[in-house]
Amino acid sequence: MKNIRLALRSLVVCGLALTLASVAQAQTQGAAKVVQIKGSARYAIGGGSWEPLKQGMTVKPGTVIQTGVENGSYVDLVLTESENAPVPAAFIGAPKSGGAGAGSGKGGGYKPTAEQNVIRLYANTLLGVDKLSSVQTGAELVTDTQLDLKAGKIFGSVKKMSAASKYEVKLPNGVAGIRGTTFEISTSGVLTVLDGQVVLAITGKDGTVTTKVISAGQSFDPGVDIISTIPQSEIVRMETTANGTQVTVTDGGAAVQVTPDTTVQFVSPTSGRTGPN
Image 1 (cartoon, helix red, strand yellow):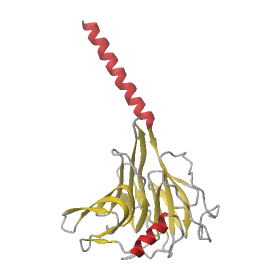
Image 2 (cartoon, helix red, strand yellow; image 1 turned 180 degrees about the vertical axis):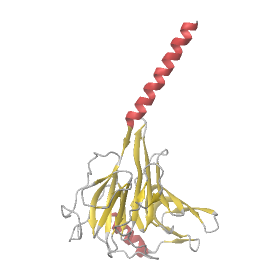
Image 3 (cartoon, rainbow, N blue to C red; image 1 turned 135 degrees about the horizontal axis):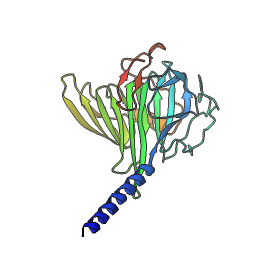
Image 4 (tube, rainbow, N blue to C red; image 1 turned 90 degrees about the vertical axis):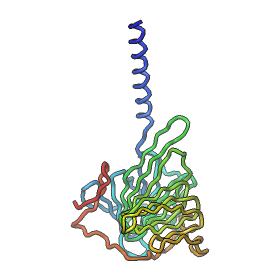
């Protein structure tokens, strides 16, 4: 009997080890493909030095991207579930190299497919790519996307995800949970949702955490604590951005100046903390 118990225990341990190994093999680190740049942009990995960001580059978790202050500047990223995953959509008239003016020519838009998660960093924006991972459980694909918006504003188009998946945008004073949504959000927590739904948790000056559910066609401004309906002009503008057409957006609110070259703001790939180089 004792030998039978030992044998059964050995089988259980081996089965558990095989299961863990299978899960580990199924887990994949994703990346962000730089599909379009207009104006200046740069990136830093961990506490490293700033380097010019170029169209066609692959950005991995632990990287911070910073766009220039020039009006109309932006960077478009497609988030992929694997570092080596191809970007199926094609460039539409976009130049082959990045740098000032890349993608700004006539017809130079990027056309994402419905199955891609796209992020646009507007001018004067600092964004940390904290985590991009996925696990194929067999029944479904579970993804984990964590972005850290330190300054400025981003536009996002996120495909539908499995119930176990997570997509979060961290703010200086809160966090936004995204699910199959087209949205814009700034560091102040001003949020506009074109479709889908976003759950936003914001910490006020008194330390109180307020949670809001912003649905399709709504906008929320934590400064006045009001959920309002999106004007038709904003709907058209966001739809245009979602389709990859060139648009010029003037960021509202107080601008945060781009960090001088002598200081590098970075995101730790483990703790998510920021600090000077």
